[in-house]
Length: 356
Image: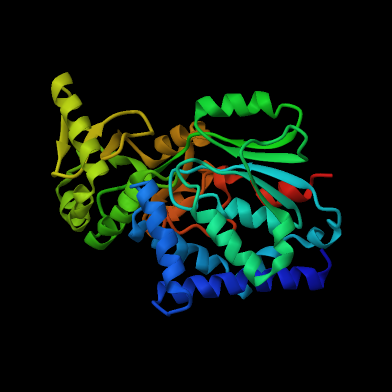
């Protein structure tokens, strides 16, 4: 792209962001078309509630501010030298609404052509936004292609999946430059001095998207003999998650399994908390593990960094964790990544611009 093309591209995404902001604010700019698209997405995937879709759209809208996009791309001056567009394949995840939008944005703003294979769990929302973008700037039409299967003749591939599917991706795309993402989870570290406000904010990191995101807190690290009473009181406002049929079914199922197996756990009617060394936890379950010291914990986490997406911690403890080489997030902000918060810590824009 030449500079003028970069500005044109930024402007089109900014206008898309404006339309999203208008919809979220209830302004009547084709409100009916948006409402229909979002309702269909929820009908096809009950985890995609209107509230959670709106939350993701709000985050995307913050990315699409003109100044935000300009500042982000200023870190990649080589974009203007990338004149010949490459064809980049992206295998989109579908665990939370529009989770692949960041990849979508990166491929297009690196002046490349996107071939996207959508997840069956999220097959409506991104094409809907893509059509909105094309209506704003028709030149995007030839650069956005949704496919049933990715070719092995692509210039590069970005694929997101489970640890099992990642092995398949590694083999299938072995002759293509690629980024393959695997299972990761968010964790939180508490020291027992957190305020009620912080513990309440932690509920957002745990329950947003019903805990299905890779940035959701799936495990707590707590001091020895930690008292969970304050934690349970603080997260009480999130109890409405139990009214969601699929979440409720998972809660009942996992609680029943623990009871049948004789496992010791604590629950408050909508979340089971259990002592477990695993990072990943089932829906409606939060694992925890006790630690002896921050120093020992840092060493442990550094060895596990390939399994951790982000670490949630209070502001006063952030400096104690700088050595772990894992993104540190303030309590309550796990589901508010910036454009520079690349999945798995891999700079996707840098990767795309290094392809020839």
